[in-house]
Length: 264
Image: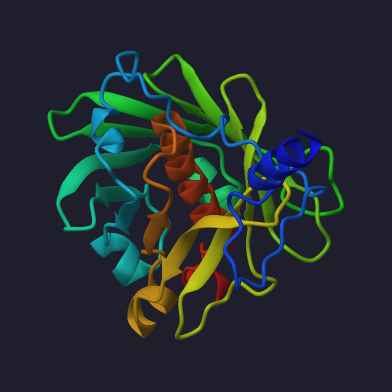
């Protein structure tokens, strides 16, 4: 009887272990909970307008539109973005709302509100960024961004974490519980290549996605602020967190890729 019980316990312990695999069971390793970022099976309470993000979508393309005035004169204008699916079909349109004074004086640090509307013109997501610091000299007043969906209802937050070498952010849900981490490279110039910000679990051990700034060519990258981004996330990521990831992409764009002629 005792031997049967020990065999049963052995089967439970090794039931996910593949013979011949170099990965042995690690019973002392902490298991990262996924309930905070995975989509619940019931989807009847999705925020209106986010239904599309729940349709097996694991890649989002964000294309910043070229402004002729910005391209010719090098002046900073309000950003406009098309948000597309992997097939290149537009699903949302985003417009930055702030004053010319904010754009000219504060530039990449500027406060903004970005309104994201669906193809019917209905605002479904609102991204709010207050005026805050980015310097490591002020670790108590770093960047924090709020994402609302529907507008007026908090979906989550993007919070910059202090680090002397790497750009780091934490994705939080509506209750300000930490959900995911975003870690960028030490150098974000990305000359002639893409720049990847990895999306990781909270223990930073597993990469589950990334936010990529695509190389757009010499003219676009040097003479304008236009940028193309790709967001890759798990299919079963909660739609609210997917919306927060879009907000994180906007924050990364403003913080690291605002390199117009003013800085040449």
